[in-house]
Length: 118
Image (cartoon, rainbow, N blue to C red; front, side):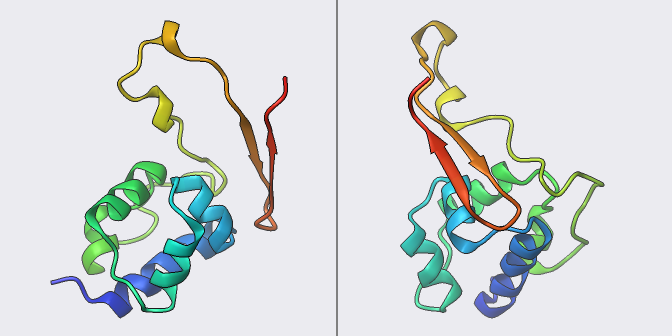
């Protein structure tokens, strides 16, 4: 069974390892910032969708480690700033139907900048 306090410790490890603020992390995995706040404060438990978004966004995270603390983190040597290569819009859409909507640049201090005009 998932121990929420141990899960939060491992989640914080991911944030520290990748030098992300909770807001930048939320934006990166495409969840509301309040969801991260509620998780980190122990108000809510992680949903399966949340866990899968973390798993998709961070290939160095072993799912067994994230859920149960078994194994190690990171599971492979990766650059801490290597972010997901597959975005939400790339899944299930044909390339001819896609238009660039925005570019988000994440900085090591946890801030980010969004560009919507090209």
